[in-house]
Image (tube, rainbow, N blue to C red; front, side, top):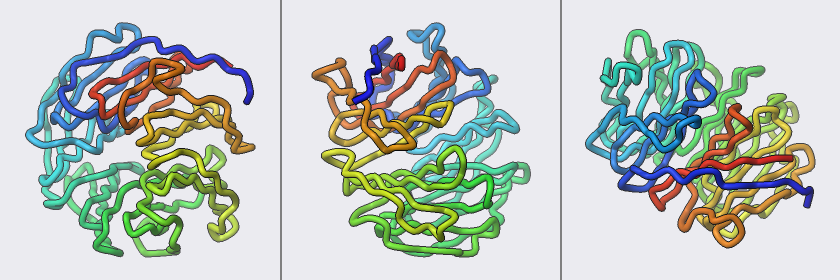
Length: 302
């Protein structure tokens, strides 16, 4: 494995339940977290011990999205819908009832916000007017993750029926295939938009060729248990995966080569499932969120 150095810089505490999601801000050193305790918190990597409570919602938050255009936060409030938060003034400015199911992912393109729900629906919302513009339910199994291709306009969605489905901007189905042998938990397009990467509850990482009609290009048994999330480095040359097996792994993006394993035994890592990753542009720091109710800040040096 290529030699790289990893050091845990900080362990952030304050959440009282599992931390499920992380989001960047317009400022490189700021990021947000949300958890099973319903709290949305702003953190500053320059002063990491001082988290600011932005909002407290009654139910768990699995999905949080920072909307770049308006700089608002869109929180997926389980069994209720989405809540739009003005994080600077710490108040809620809008909400929309979408589903009684859990909300697993939120992404946006322009003023359109896309929401993946536990009832299998993918919903498109006009953020300016706060109204549903499109909705598609391709299965009654959970829609777990969304990835957007900026070149083709594709919207890829991973489901608990083991399928990946690709939609166009109007949510018309373009392509679908059984991608894994268990739920698809995470999807990301590579920085050049030519490949789609998927991670699943079956612990396998797969690569799909966008220009080749999404035919499988590669497969790696990446973890012992479910792959919960993956994220790319700011330069797109590396990516990280995290798992229910409590580990974080650093990979070479071009060669799909494992470079480093970050775990409790070797790096004082998390003691339970690692749920979310955020590789920031601030000093190349990696952030991880876990079921152990903590957030870790990592320094990665190549």
